[in-house]
Image (cartoon, rainbow, N blue to C red; front, side, top):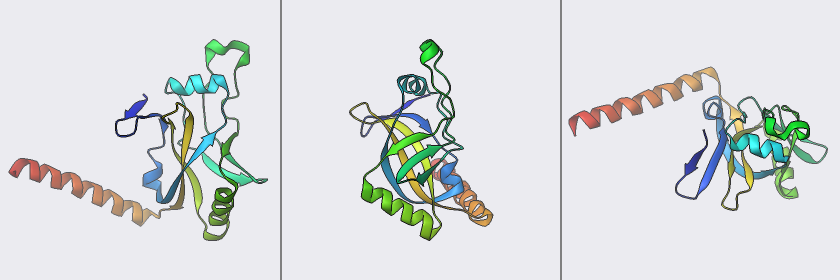
Length: 158
């Protein structure tokens, strides 16, 4: 299920599609993610899930919590725990800025996707986001439906 982004050669390994519907994305950053070999192989097969996960600043470090990467069965005894906490790699200044946004502004850190960058390193796109209320979600649905309707009309008439 991995797809390739043609403009910059990135290959999506896992994507959180629900995040853009549930949250208003304020800012995105690219972070490194510490994974074991069996986790990389499992994600490369398109089996990683980050839909229910979030990031948290704890003890001066950034952690990805509740992501599910199933075991890679060919790894036998060297397998990993599917729901373990995974460390995210960011610069110290970025970490302080993220912790400040979460603590003071009431934002949350939501993972958007895991992908390979140009150097074939696994990266996580992390968003600083604000939760949407139900009326905001209804408005998003209306805008999306109107966009589709507009495209249909333009296709039929032009």
